[in-house]
Image 1 (spheres, rainbow, N blue to C red):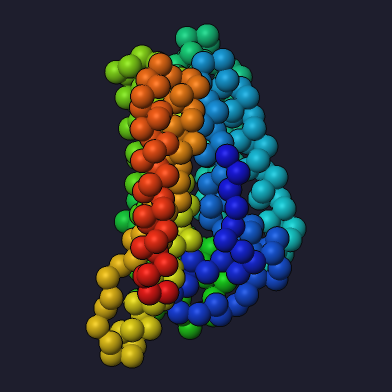
Image 2 (image 1 turned 180 degrees about the vertical axis):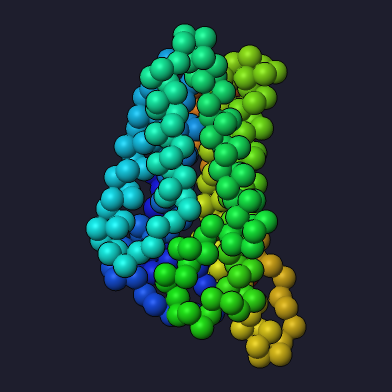
Length: 282
């Protein structure tokens, strides 16, 4: 699944202003924590029976490549918790996979996706517990130091880090349900649809929430009452995903009626939410 930054200046990092701009589109892209999570997303979606070596090898290669390119392009960039976790986790998994017995390898092929998702959730919530949400390391390199301890800046990073923690918990729960209850790691719903929706929701929240927080902060500074949260703008892409999901269900699942229903509901819901989003304050 391709992950893209929201632009040259990742606006999610600050609820105040863009203090220090990234040195260019590539630098701005690499300094987005979504990029740091790409290896985990790749691994959790690829791993399965007969695919452990491929998934862990690709995730490790992407981790090393992204870290190397990041520090070559942004020579003043600090080492991030997520970067170190990426390389350490997937290098360890690769060594375990290479030395594991057939039984252990079978276990890894079945449950490694859940292990990866739980590990990321622990990183997210653990960093929040010690009052340093992991997105802060990225955000502080994009804004002026005078903003680092402001309430809006910290709240934004707590919210985004928490959103990712929840997304990976949902993905882990879906995978576990498919493995332990359905006994089918390749189930289209638990292995793909639910997990992809959770990740897409987190990516959208990362892009959407900072604008909401900035608008709220601006109204507070002006002494104006808060406006209703513009949820329609957040939900539009998620509703839009119902259409391709419905098409996939039509092709790969026997429940054709569900596929048709998803396409119809997705189309109508997207149109309705888009109409509401255009009426919401920006």
